[in-house]
Image (cartoon, rainbow, N blue to C red):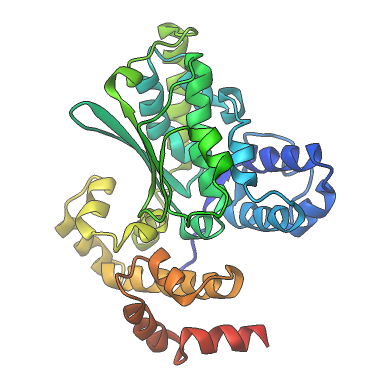
Length: 338
């Protein structure tokens, strides 16, 4: 199975570098740690590998004294900094329409995150399904939630407060900046990141609403989204790409993946067989690959890695790991550290 390299806009590392520069952190050192060059970031709408962004996050976390740098970065984000996706949001009619467009075009910003709007009777749940590496580092996922909430407040020019915020990260000792940022009920150690808005909040009008302009921007965003599709890649890699962001939400169901691809579960299984693999083998290989990197680079407990890979019990992950590497996870970590 070939490895899939997820990508995202260069706008993402630029946000981190701006934050670092404002705090007197050597940005050249951060870029070197992430193997990024000024040329790679010259065009904010060019694409960089997710691996480079992860290295940049690690370097920034090592160099900053802030315990909540993700929230601090997220609180500074504007719609304009999200490029064409941000502009489609800003010129929408309502906040709900803006968030629906973000859900539709999130892959342009980052292939490592799925953003969804789930409507309930009198509220809407805006939820993030994010790559396990980003969840493991804590700050990226917290920054994403803060950024999307902040953009919503800016484009409505209102200081709306969610009903609640869910985060997949552990509760910190000091929650002051979380309370200042979100100003609502906080729930930590949740399966996924999300915030809940009332139906009235989703209907908040946008002052810059422009139906004609937003229509043109949607056409542009749709073209960019289409350009990201790689129809020539092996079908197994396509399935693997869909699974990347779903791992930490539990074992991804075959039927859900098939639905995302617009095909039936039976068709998905048949096409994988034609490519010499199966759904369970694709998922197993992906978990194997991600597990080794999380154990070595994530500084995480074995139970945390099991959770991020969607295992219901650490013992199930440990059995799988012994099958993959003929070592326990702790033995693997100690040998790599030696």
